[in-house]
Image 1 (cartoon, rainbow over the protein chains, first blue to last red):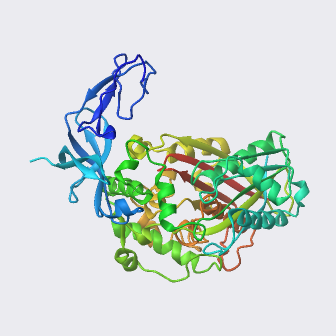
Image 2 (cartoon, one colour; image 1 turned 120 degrees about the horizontal axis):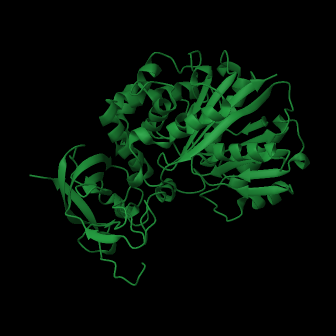
Image 3 (tube, each protein chain N blue to C red; image 1 turned 120 degrees about the vertical axis):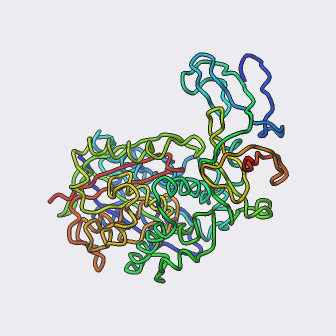
Amino acid sequence: MSGGKQRPADWTAGAEAIVYQCCAACGGLQYFHRSFCVSCGAPDPIEKRAGGDGTVYATSLVCRAATPETRAHVPYNIVLVDCAEGFRMMAHGDPDLAIGDRVTARFAQFTGRLVPYFTRKK
Amino acid sequence: MSYITGVGLTAFGKHEGSSSLDLMSKAAELAIADAGLKRAEIDGILCGYSTVAPHIMLATVFAEHFGIRPAYAHAVQVGGATGLAMTMLAHQLVEAGVAKHVLVVGGENRLTGQSRDASILALAQVGHPDYEVPLGPTIPAYYGLVASRYMHEYGVTQQDLAEFAVLMRRHALTHPGAQFHDAITVADVMASKPVALPLKLLDCCPVSDGGAAFVVSREATGEVGVRVRGCAQAHTHQHVTAAPALSELGAEIAIARAKANAGVAISDVRYAAVYDSFTITLAMLLEDLGLAARGEAASRVRSGYFDRDGAMPLNTHGGLLSYGHCGVGGAMAHLAETHLQMTGRAGNRQVRDASIALLHGDGGVLSSHVSMFLERVR
């Protein structure tokens, strides 16, 4: 973190939020948090909270997990979602989601922690 | 100029009681003997990594264990692309005059040295520690995501992917060192247990023990020389979340650079050795490299194009899918087999003409790519 600014909590820190960053200099978007813009290198991209809407880009239903904790959840659907704001993220989703589905995020418990979980938009 | 002067490859499968260093040593000894050299003539060592026995200085650990005091040595880590990345570096070291004979070695007791869960867990860590790994993905899930998208965009089916598993198994049946020797059908692949859909068990390479090694030298040491004609890399991302569009992946970039570097066209290629961690990996890479049109690799498998006696023999040892995958040594087996084919020593697997070969490796989730052309010279 740079400039002593408070980083808003998101699901990776246990809060019910999806946060991304937007560069004030070039307008570049990024999902993985950094203290600089990965497109142009400018410092301190602006933290923004995503609305949770998106479109399914890819899915994989995990049926064979590698730990006792994750095995308790099989099958679980790993999805890549293109969020409405213009960045891509990995999350969980309904098992029957298909590529191109319009989805919206809620949050679910997985191995004792909070994860984003997408359901088909009604 | 540089030559692959010797190759060594152990059987893959279970090597009960063998350590990673044991398997590396066995392969290294075979490669040095194959090159007609003595250990003392090796003045450079490049080695991969072992997930079973991680070490911050594996090359010198190996050098001491094996009994070599090289002028140049370090490890290289590029996931599944490590073997070809090391070969590319060895080629450049030899060309630059840094070393005369570079030993490239990888080996791991990945199957018997740790549980299968431990292997899967170790490999899943190529994912992003904050934004991916907490979601419980596995390596098959990362590739399952890519597969779902590829199938969606290009109309590829699960039956299409199954063809690659069947082809690799058919090739493995003719190699005594392969991990699997039972024939399989498309129906077997379709009926195999779901792992990370659309990928099923037989779409995935196994976990193996094994080792592989090469010697890369300034001059040919045998009658038939296998020369590194040209090579190149491309690295577009690490994590699948950050991967570019399917049409902009690194294989296409690496092969374009390698073609320019080698002055070779795909139409010149007579033998192909392509990374096949999953059926989808092989299908995509064949199409990215230009060995099949987009969405048409499976129909080329069905028509026999990639068979031993086909127009473009592919991974005639059985590939990662059926010869096996012991980590870094896994994809090195592709080069060992290519060398045997190019030097006319592949026995019952021998192809008609392997005068120019294309090799391609992929590390991470289609993250790191190395393309290489080898050429036979007399």
